[in-house]
Length: 175
Image 1 (cartoon, rainbow, N blue to C red):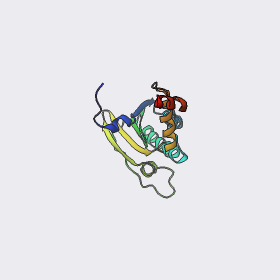
Image 2: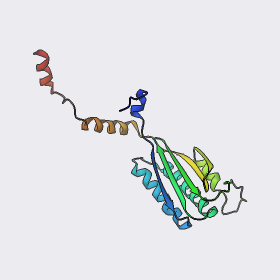
Image 3: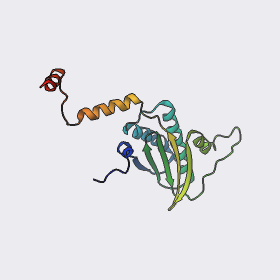
Image 4: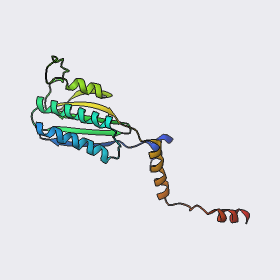
């Protein structure tokens, strides 16, 4: 086992990553929203309404854009670290995503603007055979009581010296 380079490394949470591929049709947008929220919850993240809504909106807009402007499969990537979820969507179009400035009554064209509003950061990058558009969404951090409960369960489950009762501790101290 390699030594830790700093004491804080012992307490860092691992990055959780998953990806799934969609065929690239508009009927998959709603199921993609559910799959992402369900996956984040399966990782043990307690989502509040604000974070859940932000995730759903970002997934909807990124997947919809990939379906509308690409052809074929769309890959959704999720990368979670405490307090943060990066949602990436890969499609096979090399066209740069652009933020539209739609007319007041227009039905569409606001997607990337909304993503920029609900995300902490967002961007895009070219990849082999297309591009990856991504957005980072802030997630609620575990409350101290929740962390304490998890640590308590961890330490109770560890084998080690048993605690002595008060009378045992007293008798061994006087012996």
